[in-house]
Image (cartoon, rainbow, N blue to C red):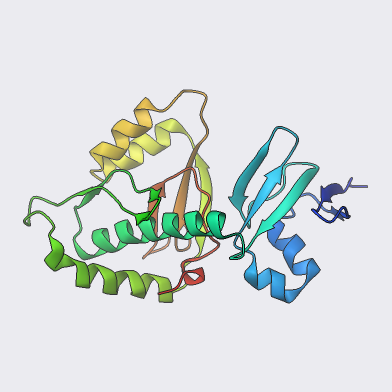
Length: 211
């Protein structure tokens, strides 16, 4: 018989769930309203709390806090992080050959460092309307944001093959013992999906954002 995981909630209750269950499953079990409102999760397996994707499975018994828009600081950082990635995806969709580097949330917004392809002039303010329109298109497509763990060798090979020299160098410089994760915007490996290297966390899909 499979032993159930024990997930402790802030109100003191404990829910027993099967292995492979996620914070999203807990939210759905509590009610449809929370399932819709939950953006991410703060999970503590005993070594300290970590903000994680709502769909990332538990790795054992844990304490769980679900993050919603009421948790303004956490929610704002999450959505700004997602907007940054959607910005990079939009730029690469509009101008193939653009290289990307880092794209964090900041205290007052978000940004993504990019290098324009040799076929065009550097980016300017004139490009922003087209980029913004493409970002809205990606958000409205409600593309799933999917986390995967990759080996260092596979990741470096992928970036080198795609001409992403900055990303390849970054992957080489990360600590040897660090878990390397990527996120897909869209179904992994399907046409129209987009890949970036990132620790996360992210929302469940692009459609969770306000266009």
